[in-house]
Length: 201
Ligand code: GRF
Image 1: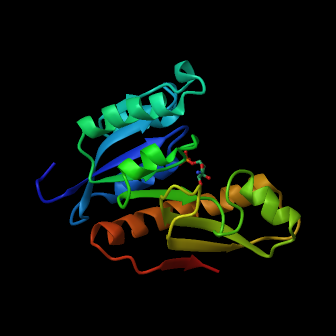
Image 2: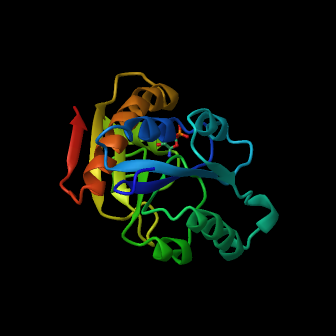
Image 3: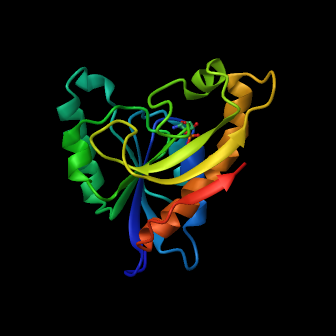
């Protein structure tokens, strides 16, 4: 890792397709380099993908901590900070984080959420857009604050909803836009550029 590059840690819970897109983008003149891929699930498929890309990996299984979110987050922070990240990217990370964690990384943590925020914070976003009869859906990259899915929005990709499609179809059509949006936003963010990125319809 050359000294001038920003160190980017990526948190995942599953397949890590957004992590792969981010890691693949951090090459050449990109101002960032991945320093760690960390999962709350030791069996997350994304961990082996990261290892195959030569990226350091770790996991902190949330299950032994039960309802003690603070203890789980303290363990996450302990592992994360050993790798001295300048920025933390949540990418398909499916644990709710308390303000203890979001405060520790305040001003240097991003998340991708599969809706056009501020609409549909939380889960089942595509089904909720379909149920509402929306004609457009998409994804958002935002700065992480104490409010779940509530921080300043840095980028959005808009995808027209097709007649008759279901939530899985819609999610599959939006995912490639996530893989384009998140790297574009991260590159700008690391360069200190917080201008909104808008992709798609
Ligand atoms: C994606 O839809 C992402 O928006 C959501 O989790 C899904 C899977 O992400 N947060 P990934 O393939 O693990 O990056």
